[in-house]
Length: 385
Ligand code: PLP
Image (cartoon, rainbow, N blue to C red; front, side, top):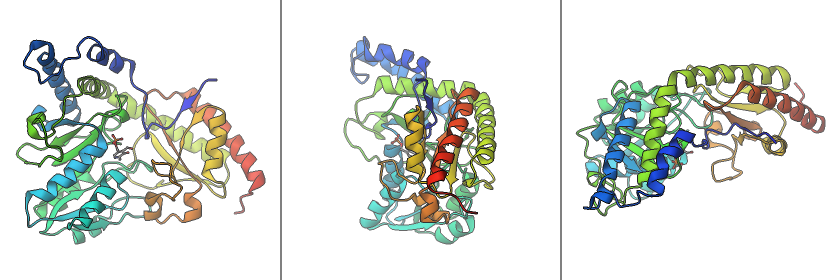
């Protein structure tokens, strides 16, 4: 059975070129890059090359990139590090639609004595900048606003949010895990102090990521140990993973323009056709001013998203439920809740996320099956206007 993978916001397939680049470091070149001997230390060249590849994708300098185990760790370091810098600044301001890597970390820090303020979003899932301005003050250590939301694809006003943070003397962090490699992002143009990214969202390997820290900012580490990465992130270098991330970043940059164009066009076709062929369906955050090219959440009124997912799965089409979080919890999505979507509708939400490998045929097949599945489920649970 030919499968269709439309869950690229959850994770992506590794690009063949990435695997190729990693293989020598999984086979022959297994030495520890921090070793004195050349067998290990020669790998530093490949690690530095990867640093350059990641830096170029972000418009950053090489010395501003530090390798981590992924988005979750980078988010943790941003928040946990920032509140340690100045004892007079223990405040965290974030948004209601952040990934749990930020929200749960912020809540844990609140339990440890930090203050936490959560900015609202509007019905389109866009950050309420006025509300953000009210929440940020001279005690704020860090403002953390995601670049693009993982469920709705809504892109946040980073430059404006950074300005709010900086006016109050706070650091500005963005969780750009969903944005990097899928849409252009320039850390200096947007005035970002700290940024998190993850390799497995851009056709790289799992368990590796990076944190960008603007030159001059001394962000305390969360992992202490052997002082790798100039002491910013201790731990033996994951050379294969880092090389894979570097290659993935290089490929993402090479293909960025085409990726944006093809994902955008396929998503728009998909949305139009779904709305036309599935009565009672609508697109979440349809009126947002900026959305990622390839991520969309659709609500099929009156139908449980899990029923649709199961029937799609049986035909080899893989999407995800907008109403369940990453751990498979059945709690309705905090993102949709923050946008004012009620519980019942949130349970009817499905996310489809594309990649540069998604084809027109795959979209055709998905829409055709989706309309049949929705029609079948409608017979059991009719939608009444
Ligand atoms: N932040 C966002 C917005 C995400 O979508 C994810 C992954 O789903 C993460 C953080 C966590 O990244 P990682 O899986 O690399 O820990």
